[in-house]
Structure formats: structure tokens, C-alpha cells
Amino acid sequence: MIPKTERLSADVLILGGGLAGCMGAVAAIKKGCTVILADKAWVGSSGESTFAAGDILYYDPEQDDMHEWLERWNKAGDSMFDPEWLEWYGKNVHELILMLDSWGMEFEKDAQGRFKRKPGRGHREAVVFPGYKMQKKLRGILEKLGVVIVDRVMITELLTSDGHVAYGLQCPHGPVLCVRSEEYGPFHGRVQLQGTVPRAGHGVR
Image (cartoon, rainbow, N blue to C red; front, side, top):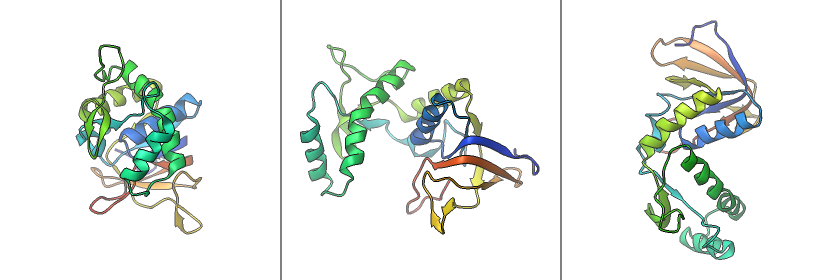
């Protein structure tokens, strides 16, 4: 519950408590920032990351060639992807999986100790750990790191900059509504990030 007079402030305000939002919170707090993570339900048991199969597209630096990997995904996606972003992802996902694995999300490995890749949604190069288990473990890690988690709040105003919806831009405020008490309370973050992207059939959180 958020009292009407309470104002929560942090260096970084993250909206959305799925895998992207949680890992964004980890990255920010490791940089020395204070972090608020807000979600429309209960972080750890809601959202698409919880209900997903837990498959994460994985670039293996020991087995894959980056150029061939990018070309393969360019073809698979009919060239509808950002090559710079995917290259960044490929170069960083190995460290992400190592981090998650060290936190107790034990991805399956082969006899040589390499992460075993299995078929995922639309591809055959995923490492897999159940999404609902991953999110519960992530919540515990965030709490230990000192991230302020605010559950069951609905963002009532989109983040904007010059009249446009902002993703990762500095914005002055983010009013929220507690979905249980129906009381309003302001959030403030020097930088605000959306840990999810709205799409058909899903509200903005």
C-alpha cells in the first residue's frame, strides 16, 4: 500500500518486474545507483517472464562465429532486427547466463561443462531454466541487493519527453495507483526505464 502523502525517490525507477526489469535493476545497483522497481502485480510471480518456458537465446562464444550467427538471425527474422543491438546481445548474453547460473538458476550443461542449448520458440539455440523459478530467485536477489520493490501498483501516466513516449529518458515523475487501496502516490526517478514494451492485448505497466 502507498499512502497518499508518501513519495518514493531513487536514482533509477524501473517499471516492470520481468527478467528485463530485474536485470536492469541489478545493473543499476551495481553501478552504485539507488533503485525502485515497480510492477502491476507481485514481482516474482507475475508477468510474461514468469509464465514463459524460460528459454533464453544463447550465443556460445566457444562454438559460434559472430558474423555467421548474425547472418543466420538476419535471415530468420527477414532482416527485421537491429544488427548492432543483436551483436551487443550476443557479446553479453554469456556473462548474463554465467551470472544467473551462479545465483542458483542451474542451466543444463553437457559433459564438457558448456551450457546445453535446446529448441526454443522459433529457434534451436536456447538455454532453459523455468521462468517461474527464475523470477522468484531474482526477487530474493534484488531484495538482498537493496532494490526497493513496490508491488501491485499501476502506472497512471506514460513517461513522456517532448510529447513522445520515452524509453530510458530522464523524466520528472511517474504517478502510480495502488491497485488494492486505490490511493495515489508519486514516484520519482532521476532516470526512468520501462522493463517491458506494450503490445496488443497487454497494458502498459
